[in-house]
Image (tube, rainbow, N blue to C red; front, side):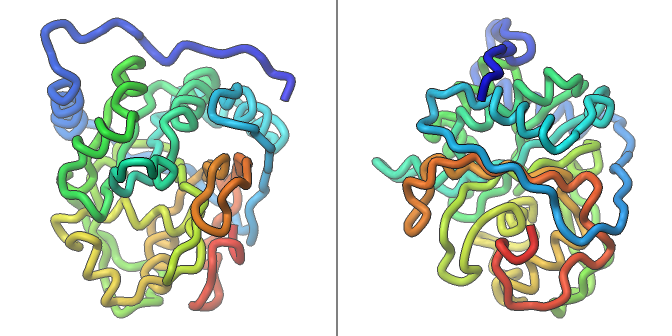
Length: 291
């Protein structure tokens, strides 16, 4: 891509006298205590997402410019982002020595932060409720993402231990009548699923929809989301995405996992205008079928 301009992420001044963990925990408390209204974007009834795929050699490339180019190619108007509160939901699984590729890479997340701030977002936060490790801040630190967020003073929210709200299960593909979500989802305008491209032994592949499993709070659904596993992973994925619809998906495929390894792609799905009331017509799917 030819776009070479990069933005600094937010205010790069350090938090005096406060550790990184203290900073993230204090911002978590501040977000929960804030009186923020709910203003999710409207959708119309198109059945499929527009998709932009770009080839990237490695994580040291100008990822922000590639994402920005994708936004332009998909006709995302800056007015759709300006003044909005954006939640980036990466895929943070766990930390295994020599296996950093299992998580969404911190530099892809940094690129997305730069782009949304450049397009005028009033606030960008990163939030995750990973299913394998109960200490979210341990994974945050060891994955390298803490360095990126602390540099830009970007808050991190642990969705596993957030305050909660409950909605009727809009999908009704599983036996679950209601779904309980972190309150943080009500305090943002745009949700971005930032998945890691990889195969999955039950769902087939992890892209934007499977990644939304991580918004479900562990204090309700357990580790690793056992309640949803018992209800049926495929059907639960449908229910989550029908009830809380992500607006964008940015998939890190620069280094994929297992059969996708070495794909060297960034895939950008734009869902602002696309996820309809019932976008999915059958259980038994992979993400490739629907996004």
